[in-house]
Image (tube, one colour):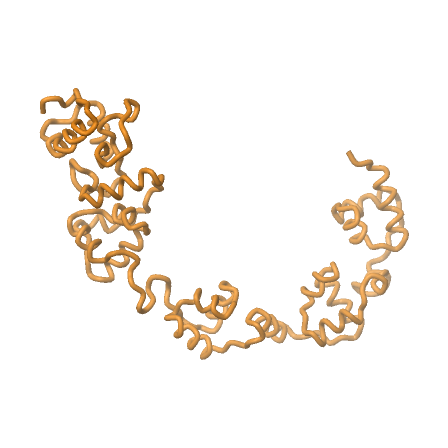
Length: 326
């Protein structure tokens, strides 16, 4: 544990030697207020703010080369913030020091133009330039910013300030959908919900909804227009789900397409050694999954999955006793 008394002695000696509170705090790696409290409790006479010079510490000329500051601000066009970072002072302190040295400060408008030029590599983008640059990338602001090595958010702010309209992601010209649109439309017309299609193609339900609506394909039921985000599926289950969908199986295999969450039900329970494979998995809604596991599924509903259950029994060499002989 650090020796507080020794630290307080160092703080007092450093301050009395002419260092500022900020410098002492930086040297001891403690807060400004902590140094000030130590000095007050030690009854050390505090120097006036700037010792008569507005905003300029008593040891300004010893710690900072004012000529270098003036050169950076006037000749190199650096901002007070950039200069402050270099010398470890606040921007307000740098401004006050420049005023005390007789330097004329830039207006806010000139400072904003300077920051804009710095952000855009010395360029001063106009509305016409931005429109032409976006047109070259089909309205893709992200690709345009990357091409010119601009900060994306700074570029977006500039477009808003100039009133330049850009194409939103997914609504740009000549941008194809990221999945087989014809197949998705066919499956949707068969009653497959958007959430299931999103899981199949690895996109969001919102993308499925947007592209089907854009091409005039409506969901078979009004409720299915609702956008549901896909659940996270572990890679091992994702492969089985994709295989089942390629074989034409969609949830629920008993009651038909559902907009609710579905389960991947084991025919041979996993605790009994049932594998995670397409031959042993049924895509069921939660209600039918529970009834199937409890053996209470009605015979007429079991008929929808009977062929799959019998195929699993044959493949895995077991008998599902709850439904034996059905």
